[in-house]
Length: 154
Image (tube, rainbow, N blue to C red; front, side, top):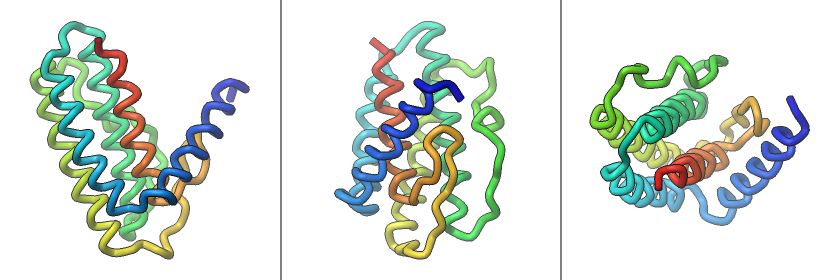
């Protein structure tokens, strides 16, 4: 891994874990839901190939993150990257908007289950660039990732 990427990973891990400790899982679930609505509104006016690629990436990372978080519910760890979770390359913007809405709804439901279950004994779950993240750290990361990536849509 190049030094810049490693530095960015450390910073993102620190900020995600700090946010998770400060806000807690119930508040992170609420933030995911609220920001999902804001992002959907932003995506509604997005046009062009760059917007399609960005939205496809956001959906793929969020679906991948859900698979990683499933470890906290007892599922086996899936070591694959995010590529298998990407929507089809030929998905239209409308299909990707729908995929985002469905994916974010599933993420919010997962976050609420994890908040209700406590998942106190949940193991840290690895991220290839950020290192080991707690359940809350993953939730904060997914929320932040989508918001940061959506800034590309102007």
